Image (cartoon, rainbow, N blue to C red; front, top):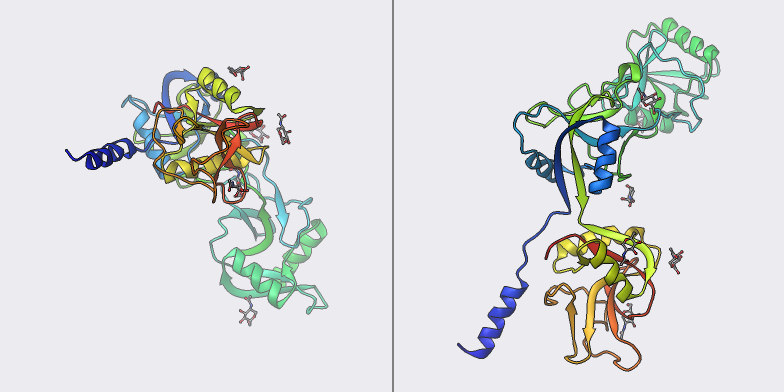
Length: 373
Ligand SMILES: *[C@@H]1O[C@H](CO)[C@@H](O)[C@H](O)[C@H]1NC(C)=O
Ligand SMILES: *[C@@H]1O[C@H](CO)[C@@H](O)[C@H](O)[C@H]1NC(C)=O
Ligand SMILES: *[C@@H]1O[C@H](CO)[C@@H](O)[C@H](O)[C@H]1NC(C)=O
Ligand SMILES: *[C@@H]1O[C@H](CO)[C@@H](O)[C@H](O)[C@H]1NC(C)=O
Ligand SMILES: *[C@@H]1O[C@H](CO)[C@@H](O)[C@H](O)[C@H]1NC(C)=O
Ligand SMILES: *[C@@H]1O[C@H](CO)[C@@H](O)[C@H](O)[C@H]1NC(C)=O
């Protein structure tokens, strides 16, 4: 074979990569409470399972290799009480919920017979605005069905804001206003929930949720943990954390270490505790690296990139050829200063997050990998 062609074919073979998952799910078919399950996962893997999207959800389901399993824990837990606020910006100190409300599902509040209930903000209701135009009551009823956000915009543009109810006296005034004006509908008030009290065990702020209709049902506040099931594992339910169930852990494949080490120290740390310093051989992997370095405390973060002065080439310490490249302009040419120090490669933690060449004794954060390349 022609030597050049042979070399090209060899490069193609070396450069083709198979994509790996970002996190790997591990099904543990042992019944534990949610907290025990969390401890087990933290000791043996990264944490109880976090799910970012449908792809993760499918990977998680695939990991469950026992068809008889009904329900399994994932890492989503209710960790704070609901925090409600008025559209006007005032904190909600006075609350007048109907018994068993709010039920934890919804983000906006309406008034019915003087009591408040939570409901999905996307539903349409008539509403009441605070208004300086009405000298008498300071209230205006808008007899148009709008979702909560649109009702808020309407009030803000045409009046003052969606109505606030700051005390019992104001609540009674509004009830009287509703009776006097023969308003038969439920009406939106300006109360909304500030944040989702459900948090992932690993502190990820993934907002992906796949609750079954009418879930999370936390009436009585006894159900603070999340299970998926039954059987098909495609619906999330709130459940009591003290139940004993099998569970799924996840293991992050890229780990940012926020210690400041030289490149050689970083390599030793990763090889001893994980698999290796990370190599980046695709756009996909580069995106994951960019995501991980957001938490770095140094302006650049070591990669498994090393320069060899002997051959004037960059290479990955995992043994792969540098095919995919993401160098900052002027970096990675192979034409390095070989006198003062050996050069190693790092990714910028800010800006374009491109790769740069640094003297190996610089002390930087680094990324270890658990991939077996
Ligand atoms: C559920 O979580 C809420 C908010 O953190 C807390 O007030 C409540 O006591 C918890 N319930 C149980 C049974 O742990
Ligand atoms: C303000 O009121 C006018 C007249 O009813 C309406 O056309 C307009 O859409 C309202 N503004 C908003 C933001 O809803
Ligand atoms: C958390 O969410 C915010 C806003 O959605 C995002 O900017 C931030 O990067 C996220 N943090 C992490 C650690 O993912
Ligand atoms: C690492 O270095 C950065 C930048 O010099 C510094 O802000 C950070 O505190 C250092 N971290 C540690 C663990 O020493
Ligand atoms: C492995 O990790 C432990 C705990 O973080 C650390 O003390 C140790 O130094 C690491 N090993 C190396 C070779 O850095
Ligand atoms: C490498 O990239 C950095 C950041 O863009 C730049 O400051 C530096 O000058 C580049 N190095 C060379 C040799 O051009």
